[in-house]
Image (cartoon, rainbow, N blue to C red; front, side):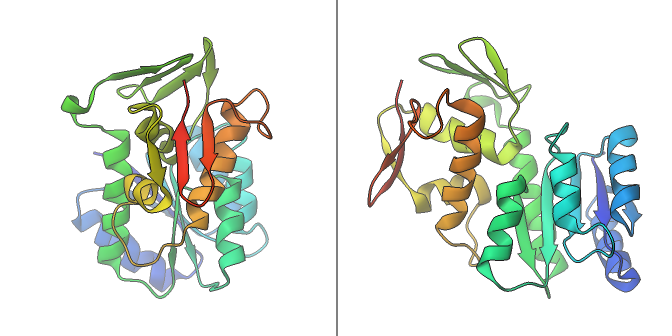
Length: 225
């Protein structure tokens, strides 16, 4: 049973989320502050974290930044902020997805399942993807380039795996967005751009002059062997 850590300081919302996730078949732990969330993540290693950005003292952005220093655990942000910039900051720090409050618990469960589908790939999709110097192990969720291990979040992994399966093919932002998040209404193209920026920072020898994930201006991206 997968364990979800819910980090939410509004007790009523935390209980609703926890009850709904438990009914969906997940083991749930709840904490109301960032310090306890980091301690739990370090010692208990949850399978996914649902993280409210509006925490007191240590907010969700600080928690995300701290987590990403040593963990690739999937993070779904909860935010009451409607400004696109705030969402992009969270994604730049390494969050996998976001949901804007108010939201439906059914939508949250759907987002969780979409993340876990990326972590637990179907066998017929191929366990190992090799493209040039890049190798992706979908079973272990491990990536390497020129035998150097690269620590990727599930979203970054799938964003790389999708074009790496078909080097040279150009993928639109909409196609990549569908691959990493599934069909949904609350999306915008810059989500893909932010994840590509993070991916290049980890993968490329020189992120400003990418070798593997190339921009096709006016269209999207492609993988170059």
